[in-house]
Length: 456
Ligand code: UDP
Image (tube, rainbow, N blue to C red):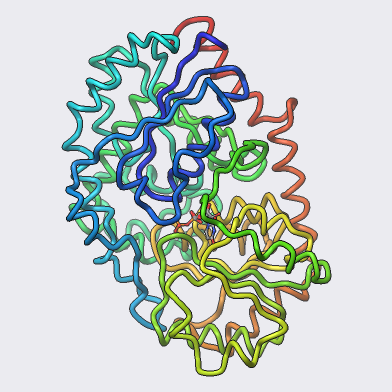
């Protein structure tokens, strides 16, 4: 393995960088060399890992330009704002489309860099590129440099399978999509309407088509999941794409893969709480709730009477008046925590989440039941998996974010021992997958051995 050298390049967002960095640590622990490429925007992200102390001389960090001027970067908002208590995500604030375009503008620069790494003096010559699925244009660079191109898919296998299947018909219309019944784990009635509508948008559809078409040419597609969790979707995908489940990457990665500025002050507080008594609330690294949504949520949490730890990145000014005083003694509100660690703490009884895939995976690893409040992208699909497939939690009822529905869902999930039992079971399956005899561990062995023996 010492002769292997992987270049890993994530899309510059927390939810993409962290799992790819965890994979980098796994590769290094198996003896491979890794060059981890981050962009200036990735580095500037407030909650980012910024060149963590490198104990491994086989892991090198490179920071490249993403083509965005310093001035422009300063004006970019990375948050996605939820407009109101109707739970509608206003994506116009997202910097993602700008980044997608500007990164593609750096293609020749990336090509030069990879070419240099091929002739690297301090490391073995570059063996392959592992790239985020958001950057399909890198396939051409890999091909030109004769480097195997491996894709890193950051959400669920179910989501990928679902995307591939919905793109398959030549003429996809809403009615056709609703009738599709062969999508694993998701019934036609439960297909997230948001997704269906999105596929009606020609630009959006074109983007997905490009990603999936490029993936068909990939050497492998790496998934942050494990066989026992999404067996059906993984098997379905394997007939169409070269997928491999290697996760959960957050197990056994070691090192600090969360934010360096994460304050662990909440840990001693959690230590003082009874097992399973605390509700953890967080909406990931991008979503910010607007005042009316935040108010309803806070009132629901307050009336549930549970003890809670809540990460609020946007500031606490929009919380209802007196909320912090009234809940003093049973609350901890922080801008950011080491979520992976929090979800493994014995005091956590449930997780109120926006259902980002990393959050879902971390909750599964911690064996924590979930209360789902999804907004956009893969989140509605993930909620369906939690609720109907794995039965380790439930969504919040109603089409609006309403205090009473929030209270009911919290009390229901925190008192339901079935959810906890199922979640603990999945947690042990996740650990087994990453143990030396486990499916994910073996799959990574298989990938590495393929490179050692045949080059590609
Ligand atoms: N996260 C964290 N501390 C926080 C909130 C979030 O470390 O206070 C991390 C979390 O562990 C996860 C990532 O941020 O790894 C969020 O990714 P996810 O896919 O759940 O959602 P996204 O941010 O992409 O919407």
